Image (cartoon, rainbow, N blue to C red; front, side, top):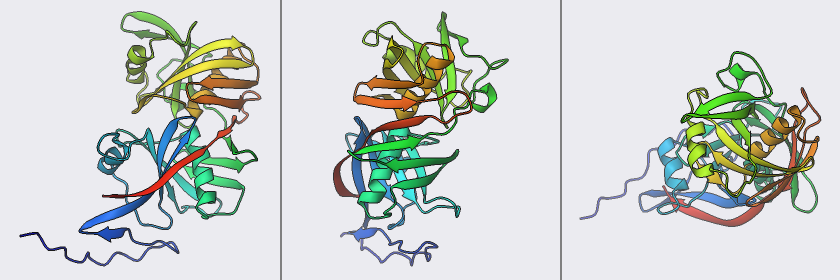
Length: 304
């Protein structure tokens, strides 16, 4: 005999206009989502403004699972703002279910999503993240510009264990002496220069640096090949996700690390496995500006 499906307990009244409960279907709840990507860095985007959703690590892992869920690098949640001077709250969850502070490619998808789903008509948005406010601007030709804020270079604020601030740091990994740059774009990044991006040991060195004890919150690891002062190739091993086809905040971190070492100019094309981004950084105490596309793949619903 099947277990009867009893009506759910009445939900608490939402404190934001327009929030609707999730659709109920045979004792399960149907969550509406959109699949998007920024240069192949793919996301499940959830509208938490017009439907009620409580994200948990377990739900994040279920949605991100490429075999038994939807599959993605990260889950993005659009929520009502918690402060009066911003338009939305932007939350990011990795494949492992952990919430993280920043995602540049996700920010571009976020901007396209809220406009395409008619959650706003604005072309310039102020969005609240776990570490501050970023500004998104929808431009012509499917390009979205993201003001990623001023990079953080002070070791305790990255966080990174070092005696003092420097443009590069020695790092011992499995008996090997490496030289890295440490930058936070709202999330921590280690950037190291390699001679050939195709042969760089991303799969082996990436996870070792990600979990290095000098990065107490773990770290995203960028492998940068410099082609000239205006162009680089980049691969990124992302914290909690592994190597992805593109990493917007990683591209920004690389274009901070390069000029600090006088290896790059202030405006750089960053070639990632999934495509190219334009990154501009005028210098210290100035924000990093990222421009690139965002793509919608499909809309769907999933039982949770």
